[in-house]
Amino acid sequence: MKQIILAAIALAGVLPGVHAQRIKGSDTMLPLSQREAESYMKANPRQTVTVTGGGSGVGISALVEGTTDVAQSSRKIKFDERKKLQASGKAVKEVVAAFDALAVIVHPSNKVKNLTREQLEGIFTGKIKNWREVGGGDLKIVPYARETSSGTYEFFKESVLKNKSYTNGIMSMPATGAIIQSVSQTAGAVGYVGLAYLTRSVKAICVSYDGGKSFAEPSVANAKSKVYPISRPLFYYYIAQSEESVKPFISYVLSDAGQKIIADVGFIPVK
Image (cartoon, rainbow, N blue to C red; front, side, top):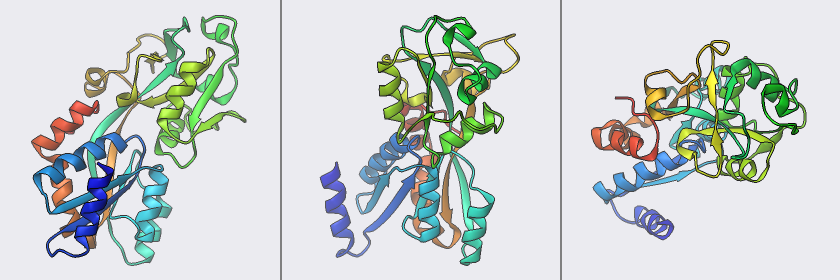
């Protein structure tokens, strides 16, 4: 696939009617956008779409700098980011491409099955340090988080920690796959990942946002019905002046075919 994309980019420089688009940003959205791009290019052979990650903040910065055509983001664009675009005479457009749920994950050997939002806050802010404090074994808690440029990092901080600071020395990982790997290899570990990334090598925790009265497991059905509380929209951002060139791909993602891909990858369609 990499060779195909590179060849298509080369053709774009010499053949009329061949157009290359760049999408950059959220690692959560990476598998979604990659699958959409592959399908879109099959249906539109004279179109090329390249997709790279790096984090939501990286994608939006690239949009500001003009080094990407579309920023994929697992959080809303910030006020200061929007102001930077406006200062350079650019108006930004926002599209909700899909919805996602964040799953809290632990090592499969961990006996804990349920956690309240308050307990998660305590764990990730450092107030709760041992699993026995939340009904587990006598084992030190090792929390993992995404790096600060990640929209997932910021959404978890806002929704679960209620904007309190993460504990000092928390293990910050550059990508979701690194969190999966680390949690699967560390008995006392806990982390969070997008629903589409869940594997059998980790165990997902049921979460309560009502003080423990009810717990919900992270699943597409529970996220779609809003029973599972840690859910969020996923965005594409692009410059309004470039709408003519990027709109065909965006429209494809929002089409029935594109929304089916979103469901197949493990995200929640917008319609």
